Image (cartoon, rainbow, N blue to C red; front, side, top):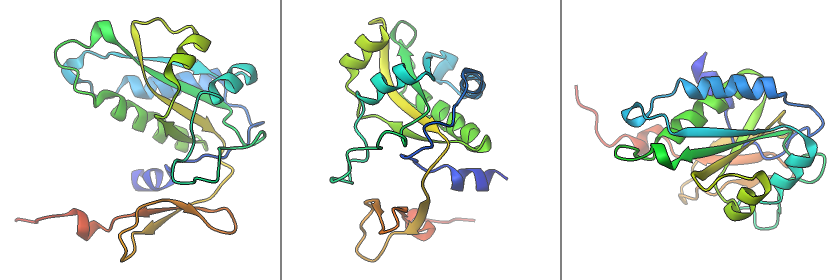
Amino acid sequence: MLADLILKNRSYRRFYQDTPVSLNTLRELIGLARLSASARNLQPLRYILCADRQTNAAVFDTLAWAGYLKDWPGPVEGERPAAYIVVLADTANMAQGYIGVDHGLAVQNILLGAVERGLGGCIIASVQRDRLRQILAIPERYEILVVLALGAPKETVVVDEVGPDGDIKYWRDAQQAHHVPKRSLDTLIIAERE
């Protein structure tokens, strides 16, 4: 059921690093992204797929993890992603009409597909883009949008309702379960008209 996939589609930041994600699986996930809506149907998104340990280590070093967890520098060796998808925009194909939502739609399709396959992921926008561009030899024509970290999740993510203090910052409990406060449905709906 779609609602179950959406609920399971959390931002996972710790993985079973030694559980591989094949290039074939990554290609299947890009196949889901390919079917996403696109402004003016320009389809400007391009992807770099990374599933080998050496490349993964280099990509990992360009990423910042979990900004609200100030005392956590990111997953330790053994809990790092088994794969990455670097999401790019072909700037030669973005003119007049690209409204910046294409990659959000595509990434959601990728992550829902990952969850369906027993995987999890995290969208990372805090990227040392110049360094990543150099490591992966990405031509200037392509804008680096986000990096998706993927793998078999090694953590529990709990959805909580935002408390009376209104704090939306995620946090970890003593058992290292990752808690994500979400606003209630009633606070999101401003009006209902029949």
